[in-house]
Image 1: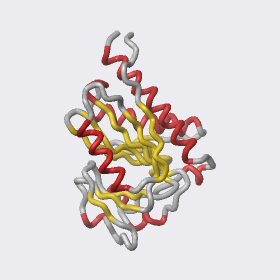
Image 2: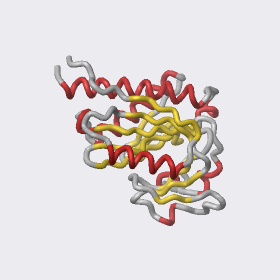
Image 3: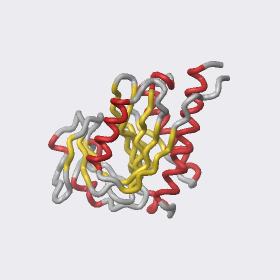
Image 4: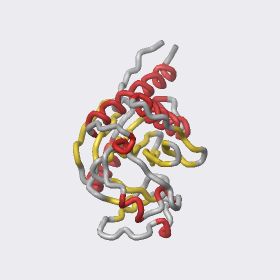
Length: 215
């Protein structure tokens, strides 16, 4: 089997402003070429609501003093804030041999595998992308595909304030419960969680790229 030629690079941005990072993702995707290595950006944001391309105004109940940003990913409204891990997946799907459904499944599986390592049983829901623990959502996904490459990515609630989720219908679902790692007995720093999840994603991507480049 051919060795993957472009293993994903992991970039830790620390805490970053949402709009600045969004602009940087779009610039990276616009400028990338066929041999540009894939990247995973780890970050967390100051409080912000983001509304996807399919977003409906009625799902924002009361944003209050938290800014609402209309963005170019799929999906409805969600919340980002300190203590929530964000991993932006800047990937060449053509090179990986991945479609959108395959990418969503890969990201969800990576999160499930991470949580399993912490002793947490998690699952997906048909028609509702993301990862859930019992009936509560712990991770959300939102992606944008441009000329066979993707950006945006996933958010995982680690040790964040959950109250802002009550101001929206999370991901378009009224009264959807949300949870976080710290409420499930996992007290691990966000950087450690980010590095662990990035490693799992890289491993799954390497398997995909190996399969698409030769046997």
